[in-house]
Length: 333
Image 1 (spheres, rainbow, N blue to C red):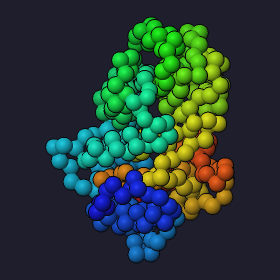
Image 2: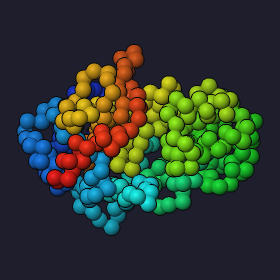
Image 3: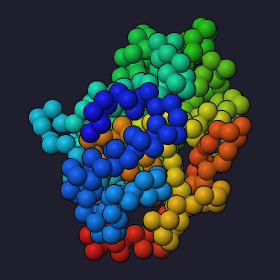
Image 4: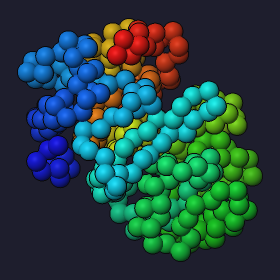
């Protein structure tokens, strides 16, 4: 682990990020057995890793099949688990420093939205609340607590109570963040509930088999029309990461300074693309000091620049044929 863990939140430049990433890589190679075995399997020599593109990224499936840790599990370790279906096992992220997770999402929220104290937080996460171990529920719970607003809270099945609170908030001058899973937000906007400019609607993805899967533009068009607002925002996060990226508009995600996206070739997990073409999304999350900071996701995307700022555009998910090469390597692990 970095000698000064708070240094990740003071990252100011590409050079800072590179130095912190290489230091993190060397620590995790030495202390994370799963990651070390993966790096060795790929025949990557650690001393030759001097750039971000040299770093091997661990397939996200390992969080489902292995215990991915870089520091010992203790009685204070918290287990975050992904949602799963009857045909799959959930991923498990062992978090040995919950304060690091809190600092990551609170600092990131303030970076993109300002102080959480200025908001009323309405969390519409029925599927997540019905199970334990959700990192998203943990984050929203802390945001609700930090907001200290009397109307902030979670909503499971009591949609009528949520609608009453929304109507009350519309008569105030209060900023409101309505964050929810896609299908629940769609159900809510079907109630012909009109919002106004005080509301930020943030979808976190996820139909959970309860609605037809939609592309992001289709989903956002549906929600904008239903809520009669001009913009839908998004959060890009997952159980295996302790940081989140946010899309404030146009479906383009921006990461905090201690997180970075790289795009890999679909058929070659070691090849990083340097163009704006679609490929697999690799994530460097320096907040993952106690697990693995270098994750190869199953998402597809591309990087685009606007006014010298780099954004991630999500393009979909790998299908089974796309992942066959990666699966072969996992089978040999």
